[in-house]
Image (cartoon, rainbow over all chains, first blue to last red; front, side, top):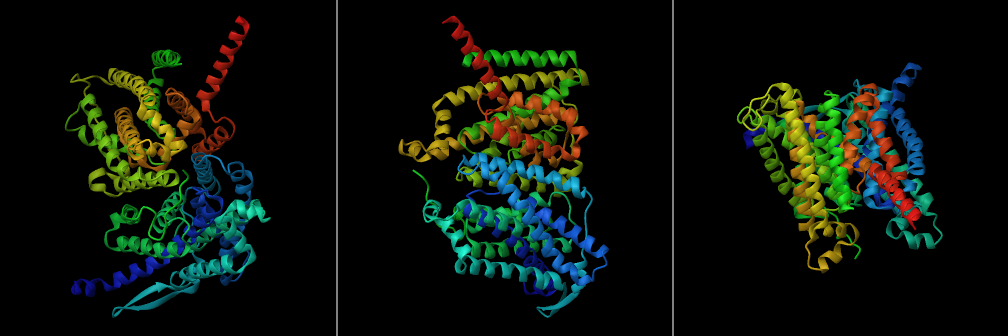
Length: 311
Length: 318
């Protein structure tokens, strides 16, 4: 065992760092999915498409800004700009035109509607950005690499993945906790999540809260995508992969658990990246093995309480 | 109503045979449509319980790969179909024991996740599954008779048609039985079912296993018709198609899935090639329109029209 560590410490270090970076991205998507579910009571299957569109949009915005001759550092705020743009345009559009029609309907219908939206958005991506991989990694190259000391070895790792991605996840985690507990809008959202009828009776405009929350959740998904775009090529199919993965996180953590989702993202992110380096065939299967194992023991997820069911 | 359904079913079957005789190229499309229709009846069963599976392509792929793996060993269509059904049923029991603990979104997404796992496994383990290249299926014998290509295709078409009628009838009987009636209760108030001493999980599991069996049979037929299996059979888009067909056809009668499947496959032949890039988008848009504006699907539209006709005739008689 000790010998194995000595031989593989460099690889293991790389796996852990990679896991941390991908956990940060998964968390951003999962937390948006969770938030939207908490308020709207709809699991948005198209959430993964918003991630993919965020990634494509970030690459396009980045390429456009570079063509204007803007300095290289502009590629970092460009990522945020793209995410905000996608959230602000698609969020209200989807909520107003589609989701508003199906609140309070049968759950299976709500599922089917977001699934239909997912199918539509998957092809919209192909029509706009084509099927060839899209790449724009200026933001990552800009920050260079950083040598991380690990178990007597030195692991070179990109500063972008080492600092920006986990940093963004941390900011969202703390910022969201602060927003929901300390601001009026945040407390209104919590009120609607807890008891929609009572909140409405107190004069809260639930429709506005729905719109706001959905837009915010969409922007978080797009942010995850935008931040992921400099780390690799964007290919068709990442939307499906992302929704399944982020749902795995949400289900494993327990619906509605934000802090739990952060820990679970880490667990699944690390599990997956260790698989990538040591048993690549298992890469895609590991998150589900973790999910199934957790759900078999704890049907409501690691941090989920018992759900009250109607009688 | 049941007699009308039987009559319509036989009439539909006759129409399909006629179409296949008049335009032999359509036989291939119709065989696939019948196979998908069989799988969609399974989706319909689960929809009765208010549950939607986004991963039933798992069982289609299980059936299809069973055929592909066994075809070199036992090249007989009947035996292969039985094996496909057996493997899918077994998979249905294993997966079902897990997923029937969950409802609604969990049920749907866990099915999706498991089918994506199978997809990845089929894609990644190249040494066994030949990855995305897929496996070619040699022409099997049919009931120990070696056939040329043309009669073979007819034989598979006939088998698909007989199985489609058989499974439609079986499902009708199942839905009318207490087990089938209990399914609808899961959708409305599951607790009441439990209060009556009927374990809801077992009711759902029975339907789930039956749906897996039908998925496996469908996969077997598809493998022997296209004679080439790829991991794409298990991809989420294939599961999405099944759900699409179920909603398009209408969740009412057991003939809806076949109406939906034949329409779907024929439209795909013409439109799918022309707008390959936007195919999922069109499916999604039609799905939205059907859900929002025609909840009964094609079957609902026809049944509604027929109901009005009957009503008018009665009105004239009185």
